[in-house]
Image (tube, rainbow, N blue to C red; front, top):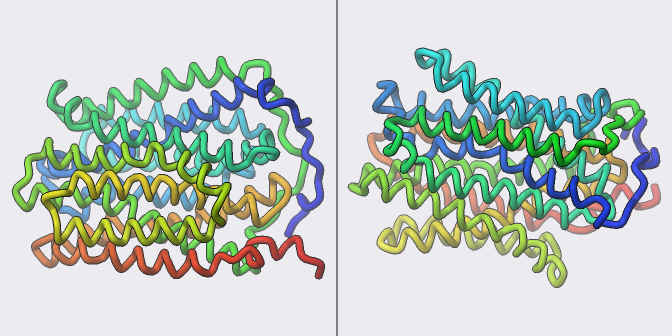
Length: 402
C-alpha cells in the first residue's frame, strides 16, 4: 500500500504513566475540534433571522466545515511527515482559534463563510492527526486513546451545544457565542503547548502512500462514516429547528441539541467497556438500531424528546468511537493507518457534508420538516447494513497470507 509498510515505529514504547502529559494533551486538543461547529446548531433560527437567508444558506455554516473534514484530511499525513504530528496539531488548533475570532468581526455572509472555511481546514486536518498521533505514540493502547480523544470531542460538543443559546442571550447575539468559543480555543492551545513541551516532535521518515482505493473495506468504512455523519450533523442542525417550527421555544430546542451532545459524553467509555465482551461489528449494529429507534420516537412521541435525544447521543458517541478506531484495524504502520483514516474521512465527510445543506433545501421546498425527519430512520437502516458487512475477515485481510 505504500512505502510506509513494515516501517518500524521510531517512538519507543514507554509505560503509559510516562506518556501521561501527552495523553492529557491529546484530550485537551480534542476539546477544540467541535465547539465552532456544534455550537451553530442550536443557534440556527437566530442566525437565519439575523442574516436574512434561507435554511439552505444557513446549512452552509455546517456543510462547509464538514466538507473540509473530508477534503483536507489528506493533509494530515503530509503535515505529520513534514513537521511531526504534534506540531501539526498545534497548527490546526491555532488556525481554528484565529479564524474563529475573525469570523466574529467580518461583515456579511461571504466573510463569515470564508472564515468558516478556514475553521473547517483546521478541523479537517486535526481530525486525522489525532488518529496518526495515536498510532505513533500509543499503538499499544489504540482503543483506550481513541476513547479518550473521542470523549474530548463529545464533552466539548455537549458543553458547546448546552451553552450556545445562554451565551447568545447573555451577551447579545450568536456572534458572542462564537467569540467565547474562539477565546477558549486559544487558551487550550496554550495548555497543549505546555503539555507537549519537551516531547520529541520528529516526523516519521517515510514516503507517503496513496489512498488505499483498491481496498473495498476502506470504502466500506467511508460509506459507514458518511452515514453516521448524516445522522449526527443532520440531527444537530435541524432537529432543534424542527421543534421550534412546531412551537417549542428556542431555549427548549437548544436544550434538546445540548442533550444529544451531552448524551455522547459517556459514549466512548461505553464503547471501550463493551468492546471487551462484544465485537465492534455487533456494537456498531446495536448503535444503529438505537439511533434508528430514537429518530422514529422523536416523530411519534415528541413529548419525551428529551429522553430520546439523550439516548440517541449516547449511541452516537459510542458509534463515533468505534468508527474512528476501525482504521487502526485495517493497517499496521502509522503512515498506512493515516492513509486509511484520511480516505475514510475524505469520502465519509464528503457524503456527510451534503446533509445539512440538502436537508435545509428539502425544508425550503416542502415548507415543513416532515420529510427531513423521515430521512433519519432511513439513514440509520443503511448504517446498520454497512455495519453488518464489517466482518473480522474484511477488516484484517491485509494480515492474511497472499
